[in-house]
Image (cartoon, rainbow, N blue to C red; front, side):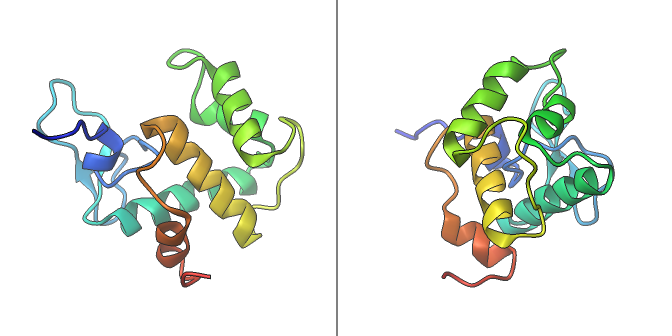
Length: 137
């Protein structure tokens, strides 16, 4: 008897990033309508999510509201609920400016997105820190 494993976890893609030719990734397989990237390891998927969030910051998207409005658009998601859930998890307001260069902020954002995308309990803060080169402290 096996437990259900969310698509993002099966693809080592905790952020459910669309496949756009990311280095080392390939288009997911085994689904009727492939769309998402599949990464060799979970650490690769975590780093790809970090890189995407840093690209958003470079474009001036530095609040949960601005990031998630692009990341999880209303055409595909209940964006307001996604924003509210992420704000609750991180303990910040939707319009608070985040420093995505701060390791703790990035960890919280990645952990929150992974939870919103896949449900709780699939990725630990330790896994995220290790993937991002921060060890397990």
